[in-house]
Length: 289
Image (tube, rainbow, N blue to C red; front, side, top):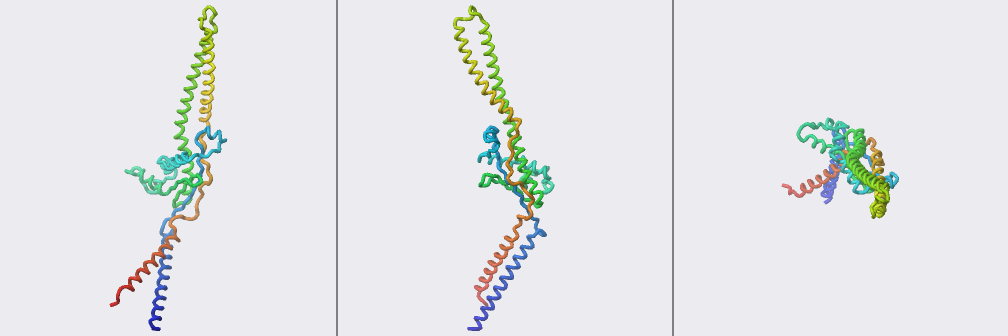
């Protein structure tokens, strides 16, 4: 009885010994092989922005400090994720050469866009700001790309909305000029009526003159409103769209985010322990010959 108990203690001590040795070896091996000597690490840089109001009138009412609504934030994120921005980003940082992708081959642009998207993460935070994160083996390039995405988003928004702003300006100008012509025409008619003598003036001329006077006042009032709208839009064209509020510009990171060496090494040790226990259970259940 004593001998059997002693044997069990020896077996348990050997089991624990090999278990600990194996877990330690697994941890060390994975930790070493996941280092920069064997795996190219990725560094992540992040820029945080608030999207401004787009409408000049709303910016003016809020003294230039308005923040965008949820719909405008979502639209801005779509611009940051657009293929147009990806093309500009690739050109500015020579990403096709860095990633080894020939854009002139079939599907080259698509592969390049997919590669960039795999390194870029853009999302709205719970504080209604927008986080722009870029992962890259070069920490300096990761920060430069994140900040460039923020800048390119403002440039693309300005370009996209400029056509609509010009269309609104042309529409307001045409309405104002048409109303101005109506006022000038009625003014000429009233002047002609005033130059008529009493004998040449029709019997109901006084009534017509009174009615035209009311029409003239109404047209002048409409003209004043249209001119105010036209001048506001014209002056707004001289003012660039508000740029993103950069809360935190991307800086060069110093610690890699991939691979997660400690997590992988710990997972390897746990997996070894589970397999070691499983093998031991199977070995004990197998009847000895």
